[in-house]
Image (cartoon, rainbow over all chains, first blue to last red; front, side, top):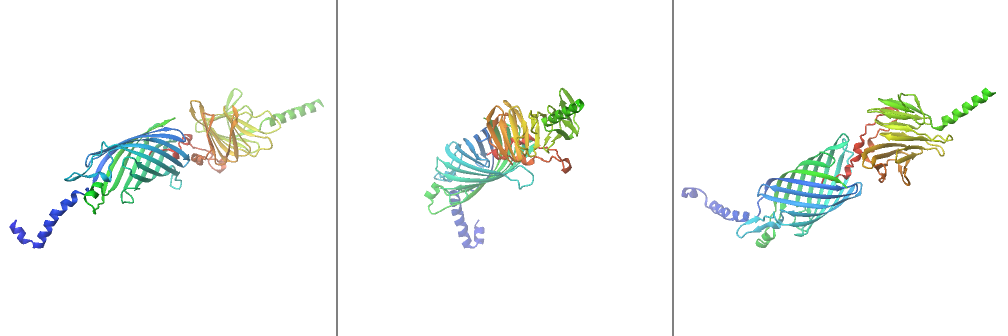
Length: 261
Length: 226
């Protein structure tokens, strides 16, 4: 050890000591970038007719990094305003969601709060225009732009999401047989986060039409979230900030039931 | 003299009989086409004359085109049964048909004065004066068979036989779905009608239409997956 230190120039010794002392302290109060995988399962029921249908949805998910679990129940009507335009209004009950302010100080140390049993209530307004993309080769291409306004009544966070999507429906014997879809969803925070786009989701999937009533599907989703400073962080480290982009790769399975009323 | 008068009577009667219904001919056929006249069934063949009371029936993967004297035509798709019911007015050449199964394309030459072209089912009558339209049975429901109708040109009036106040007019490009044969939905443009083959002339190309009506029930714009 003595021989090692006498070989190094003295200024370098000082720099090494400084980084050894400072870096761990700084990293502690900034969340680490996450790169996790997980799984989701969704069951949806659409009950209705030509111009009005009621959606009921149950979703559950798991991320393997820190064993985070989340789930939600959503319900509400879709109304067909025009052939190419639907509007919806939904209530969602959710648990396990993570927000910027869930990065909390333990004194000492920091961690993401476990929100698995925290109840949140969200109101959602939906507007979905669709059109048949006849300009694409083949037939049965559907272009969609699902746009939503989410008002989280629990923490007052308000978000607009915009999700363009393209779907191809394969027919067999005159009836839909399989759907292939691609979607890209953007979350625009209205009253939280300094980011223009807080969260992004890219989806790709396939849906099998088992019969008129039952469909089942598989999808992959790639999510990125940009975590910003939490309340605790800003209170304990005024003047500092952070921006941590985490990535999540999720495999999902869905079941859709359609009931005619 | 008596012979001359007798001949004139026969001629007069024949003229009235001929004008009782627009004379029809089985113009073209593919596959299994049969004609029922009275109680007897016979094979239908191109060139065969058809008269009021005749029923024409097509089997699977079969087709028949019936031509009327003034240029109106009706093309029967597979598994279709159509009767020529005619009318009781010898002073005009109206065409009256009764569809009991399957689907038909109609191309109707302009009618004169009070002449009509109409296709009836047990519940609905579609009447036109000069147009081209498609009329078909759909799925069987609890209250009866669904009906589909779409117009390629001209104007079609569809009326509920049991309630004359229930009627709707369809113009070019519009279609209507009648649930159970009696519940009228609003006329609108259906994307599946773009696939219909309207050609009635074998010399111009295929007269076979392979549009599967099951696809008519899928409104891709109304499917939510979320």
